[in-house]
Image (cartoon, rainbow, N blue to C red; front, side):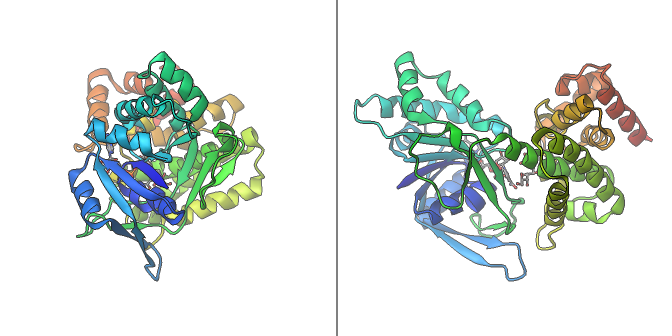
Length: 383
Ligand SMILES: NC(=O)c1ccc[n+]([C@@H]2O[C@H](COP(=O)([O-])OP(=O)(O)OC[C@H]3O[C@@H](n4cnc5c(N)ncnc54)[C@H](O)[C@@H]3O)[C@@H](O)[C@H]2O)c1
Ligand SMILES: O=P(O)(O)OC[C@@H](O)[C@@H](O)[C@H](O)[C@H](O)CO
């Protein structure tokens, strides 16, 4: 069984590749990072270390890699794969679409009896596989699109495992937190699909992806932005500061109120979920940099992402948004020269002012009360 996985980075190696390999797949990684591709090709295996007391180690074997910049090689692997997954970043999906489109065209052009193919984007976004499908479909001709409608499935998914930036001599070794959860929307899959062990299949992904994104990722990015504003370089140090922790906690109460109302989660269970996540953030065996967790602030400030969407839902419900607005304000202070989105955000704030900049990236009107709340916090942080 061959699985093609786009992105041999932290989640690719530390989570998706590991699960697929355990489930019996030969995993082929496609990546544009030639160092990773070469090392995977040469060694055919890598190690995953759990961030726990024992530092449990697992060797992932039977893996290989291809050069993701070579369209023909990518297409050939798409044509041959029994399962395709991605963990490249939601903004990169459009760049892998041409290889997938070319591969599907060849796969579906043979006239053979077609096996259903699942393509699962494992990115932190609502509807990432659906977004990938739109990019791919935009590149298919009419006949291939009709065949893809019958034989190719793009189930959305939610993936959860904290994998920080790696700093090891071995470029393939990856340290991950023990916890993981991979949830896939069964309603978007072929009627008779082959389940992958370690994956949870659900009929309705929405509660799972929103709970994950608006608890784990909302809390995480607020810890990163407020931590950064307060001079901390890691999430662990930031959360150790009670002031930062209480803002993160406050934001998770705000998203929690929305999630409980929207999806009918049991309120006590949700508090336990929040507590577990806060524990995961401070895992003493991990060092997670605020620059990673806060990366791409424009994506994180976008209307459907972890700050604005739950804040607007809370506003609609008439519940609190103060801490979420504080997170948005702190995101606007995230001044990291190596992060192109942070550079663009800072330039826009300088050129247009905070109100116009926030409005541009969040799609909220400048007069929206949540935007005004964020601006007030931003001005407070200037002092
Ligand atoms: N790290 C985490 O804790 C975590 C957890 C859950 C979800 N995610 C999500 O997983 C995705 C990947 O995150 P990550 O932390 O692994 O990032 P990463 O930067 O470690 O990995 C991304 C990989 O994609 C590769 N890539 C870039 N362009 C490519 C292309 N055109 N073709 C093939 N490969 C390409 C990069 O070279 C890199 O190796 C993101 O969407 C992220 O939100 C991350
Ligand atoms: O990957 P991002 O940039 O969307 O978010 C950064 C972190 O919050 C994220 O990678 C978490 O570590 C992960 O989502 C945990 O499951």
